[in-house]
Length: 260
Image (cartoon, rainbow, N blue to C red; front, side, top):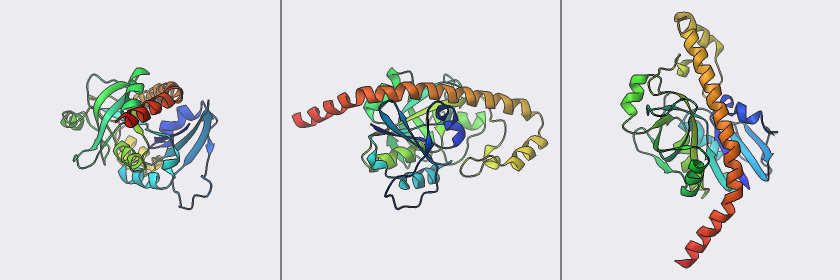
């Protein structure tokens, strides 16, 4: 099988990439210019492509146009997310039934069989993941959004919509990096560029202005690494499960269509 997995930035991908022989990759005979990092590895019988989309919906949409999405059997929109639900804790892996932008103007849905398989292999089911154009940094802001969704991230609606346009089944899977009741330690919008690279000058300025944030930043780093490990553990199980079950699921769908 060919499986496409997306992450926003390399930090989200790093724990999984360290477990498998991912190498930089270019699609043959693909003429469009690509500004986004692409990697490939064989994991068991599967050819896994990883696309680093950069942060935000605009980057996510552009990155999906930069590759031949349609040659893949399945797409997994992955990475980290903030919790809006007090029952979801850092390190939890979630799968969302639906993703939508904050203004509810744009919506996409996880493929049902992929959603069910994710729950079977350890992901917690949530109804709605909100895709925000800005980093949601405070507990107050998260509480304001909690009636609309269970988690918040910045790319998945655009990833799933792009996959649907190419008739590729897709699913949103994320690991929780920060709880609903905690603020982010710094304004990451100020210290990351559009592709998620750390601007050291911005970080030093943020910390210099508020030294008390240093322990909070260290704690957030630990949580993010733990979430990355949880996500990597899940993806190892999930990719294997997809390769073992997808042929059966696809065959059942064909039989169902033929019978109608």
